[in-house]
Length: 202
Image (cartoon, rainbow, N blue to C red):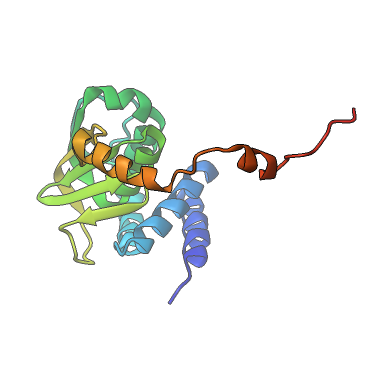
């Protein structure tokens, strides 16, 4: 089995070789490493995309809006790079849609990494495939196949507001229980605590 470090390094070099700037190549190395770590077929999809990258024309979006449509398939790498760069402004839109994107699995890790930047979960639909992206720590999905996804008709990105999974009364009940571990401060504790008895001679 190839190590994640090997995958990262080889992807960076291949990405630079095919024409991407080193900065983008480094991002791709991180991304494919991330996909492989979560059990998604990142390297397989990237390899297939690179086989046609210089043979076909792809839409290279710069400014992302709430609804993005193109008759030419969007490049997932340029789309992802700009999504990551613009995500702080994009989250105010609540939901963003792309229509017609090539190899959308390559777009996914950019969105996953953006959840860490904004501190929010994101729900991502790639056609009928669903992904819940959690602060770049985990990905929950109904997509278990290792197949290549060469296109997506529609991608929907939904920003999820942070909220507790429990009620306030449940928190108060548990907090009250935790108070049983609190130790009341006494003169004896004050005298034996760290730093007690030290004098400042300066």
